[in-house]
Length: 405
Ligand SMILES: Cc1cc2nc3c(=O)[nH]c(=O)nc-3n(C[C@H](O)[C@H](O)[C@H](O)COP(=O)(O)OP(=O)(O)OC[C@H]3O[C@@H](n4cnc5c(N)ncnc54)[C@H](O)[C@@H]3O)c2cc1C
Image (cartoon, rainbow, N blue to C red; front, side, top):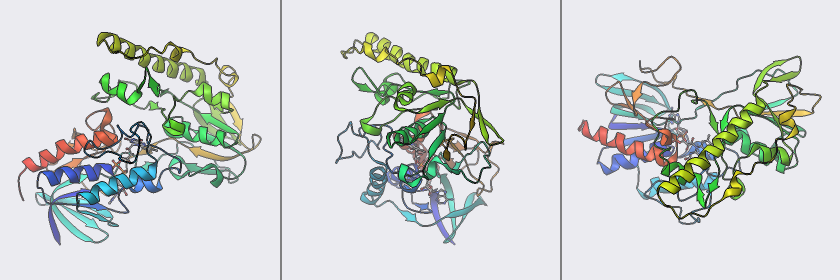
């Protein structure tokens, strides 16, 4: 049996960041990745996906995208090679192609069963991702309709001919719907409550504003908004995700998807409320940005036209509440309905009933067991590239302080 001081499980950005910080502390460790570094960026995202934040922001603080303009949005393959090169340049001890199938207690440490033998470690950092298992909330039982989760969508050409229903209007659903309508498809988009911040305002990207307004560092979601998705896009150079504009491009907007019965999918009568709440969120970011700029005497160009909204489209004022899928020629449903955690391979009493681990800012109740990269691990930024870097820095220091084996 191999032993190591610290075992990191998962070689995405969170695992790579953890390894970099452990290396700085001189902590002996191994990273096990079941596929390749940043596998999810390579094979679980659609072809045209770009980072949601510009290259100056969506990166580790220690390494720039030297081949990109700082305001450009890195393509998903470029993001993957970024993490791979980062790990290579620092000779991080990442072993790829090794799956961890079981994690359990072993004395005061841990025992990991892997596809390549057993490893014993004093500390374990679980970095297997914030978005692990695709969630599909409704059962549509028509075998003639192709159904896939957004993590399996690749491009418009790979879908059967016909209209497409996209369910879910966070960044994934909204971006996929836009790509499909631009490719000439008839598209339906079912949307629930969402936030849709402006892409840029008064010359600054919204990720810059979120930093200035202290929103990345928020400790916990506002009560009642835990499940509100955020619709942003870096596609086509980056623009505000405005559902009125999508409707103007030809997308038929629908309320939140509900039950499927006798060939029809039903939708809640909440479309107008969802759109108007999304608008309110958009306008509130402009208000907060203006107030911040005034209070701090920032010399930024005014942009009053950002407050002009397109009229509400007909599909919002006269919403469709049931869609006969065959009659509408819908050949494909893309479920952009999010992900669940999947820690079934961890045999430790450390989980809430809903599957989330019990921890405080990533430090679990079991000494030596850590989680990194999860949504809201320590703050809003935790599942994002730079946020995982910051959490990893703190957790590596915690591990180093526990002392040598
Ligand atoms: C569509 C989409 C777009 C996104 N865009 C952005 C963006 O633009 N900017 C941003 O900051 N964030 C973005 N995110 C959020 C986040 O950055 C990504 O989800 C990112 O992939 C998370 O990195 P991670 O290392 O925490 O997890 P993952 O990338 O999921 O990495 C986990 C790794 O663990 C491996 N693994 C899992 N289980 C095991 C096991 N048992 N044994 C061994 N290995 C295992 C997996 O193969 C995987 O490589 C996006 C998320 C999605 C879904």
